[in-house]
Length: 231
Ligand SMILES: *Cc1c(COP(=O)(O)O)cnc(C)c1O
Image (cartoon, rainbow, N blue to C red; front, side, top):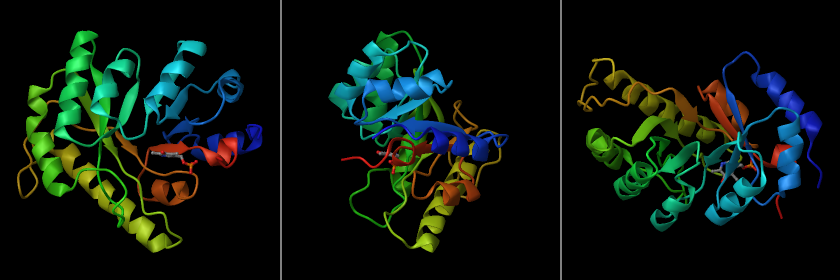
């Protein structure tokens, strides 16, 4: 399946002027497909398997901004720590501590998004409200990560109202966390942390990105619309 350049151009046009980042999700695609979009000027690519990302990173231009969008296992962090641009799926304090540790070894600060569990499905990863608060309270100890925003995946469903509600819920938490950095503590007092305010809200994929944008997303992760359906 060839890269759908027309779809790429249409989506870019749709996003133009709105300050929304398109992450082209290239998991399972060959490096030649990535190169096609690269040659059109695209730089943000998303992968969700560590081994695959490491292999591709070696073969492709160094100025690609690699987004790790999948569930990241702690023992794999060290393999991507030196080059990853943004980790979208930070979903536990243990994982954040490991990212912090590996970032320190590489002498860098790794940008991350806190992933919240927003879908009414058991299978999706992410923090619940209590875990989010717990994680946020520990952020001041983690000097080698920079929390830039939040990420979430809506339910896989044809129920657009449900998808909209799930995205709206994430946006509300994003706004709430953003405020804590500005000295406006929300009702139940999230601690102020140096990372805030936030600037990235990663939500929306091929099937639901227009809803996500309507609900305030400024970073969409799109795969199959650009590269065709995955096997
Ligand atoms: C695969 C994947 C996407 C892209 O999905 P498409 O439906 O192909 O657009 C987005 N986000 C995450 C976390 C993914 O794993």
